[in-house]
Image 1 (cartoon, rainbow, N blue to C red):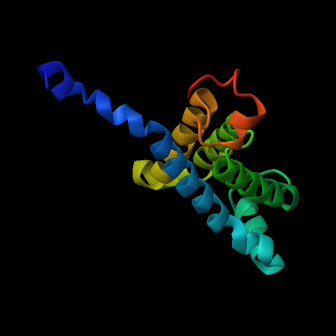
Image 2: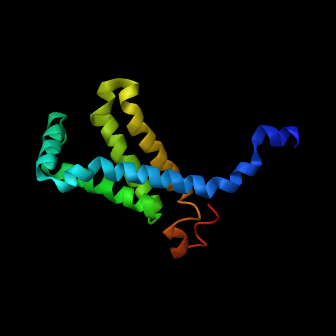
Image 3: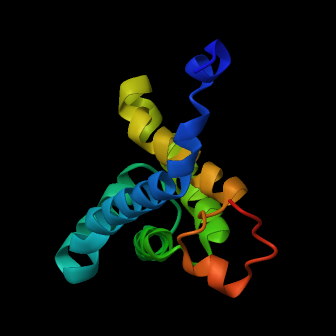
Length: 146
């Protein structure tokens, strides 16, 4: 092994699609888990509406279900690798709003989980889901090898 290969570890790129699939599965599952209680319980959704109202969101009765269903849809899209670029944009936007409206009050540590979801959303929006995704079946040529 040459020094350049030792420094750059190019052989690891063979696992990039598997690593991307694992990231999509983990993040998608996290997003679904995070909102499932709001979907399954009207009481929890009402609590979320009050929470949004407390932080000055306009129309919390509309914004709460919109945010919950957007996160759920993003999670499902990430898991399936379907409409992944759109889901990445929605995810990034949703969590940018969360940082701007709520998380920034908690400082960098409190904002970090949302910031990670912004970055992951932007990554998936710009790179796509990888080869192990439904998107590849729909438009294999336009998505390239990523």
